[in-house]
Image (cartoon, rainbow, N blue to C red; front, side):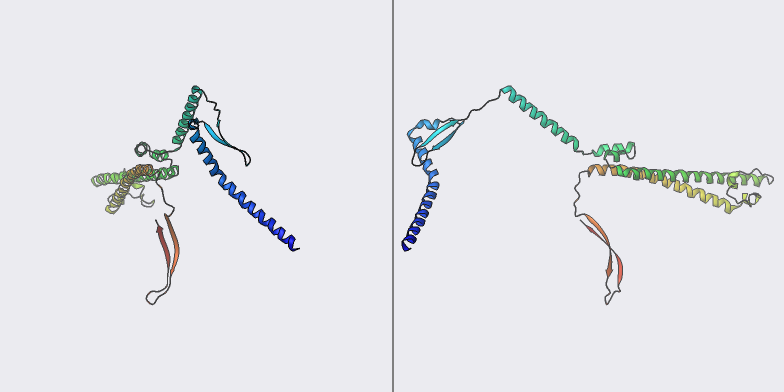
Length: 282
């Protein structure tokens, strides 16, 4: 039994030694091949003149054997110059077409054009900037201002005509008490009960002052509506200019506004309060 164990131990030991020898041979083989290649180049100078289109190949036979350094040529199929030039032209044309398509997709409005378009037709600058959601605001604002101008002007004209006619009728009635051809413009502002006796109202200074105040009131608001319409027109032009200038402006995601309820607890100096907290993050 002891002899069998010793034999097994020797076999294992021999196997370990062979493994180490095999590993050492694997790691030393590349350096050994480089040394052989260097020695061959020193003995044969023509080896340095190997063409650049060749690949040196080491043919290794089983050990022991010969290690042969042999250059292997690579066959290249060169294309004609016309074919290569056509390929280059096609690649350039494709690159230019793709570049033009990319440039067409990137839109950057011109602020000067936006202002001019908005000055010619209100809202056209917003269409040029592709801010279509602003069109209802623009045209809704102009419709509101136009309605205010029209209504105030019409009411002003009615009171202006009534005041002018009552002053004329007052002068004629003062000169001739039998005058009864009164104008309907100021009679329409009397109640039905008072229309039967216009003589009592033609020289009524309070009624005349009331017509005058109404006339001046609606004239003032008509003029104010015109001024606001002109101001809104310039605001639309300014909005088109700012939109064009800030079209590619990067707005950070941190820009936010929060509105939330808040409860302040009661202290020794202040009572408990409930309110709203408005915070802006930028």
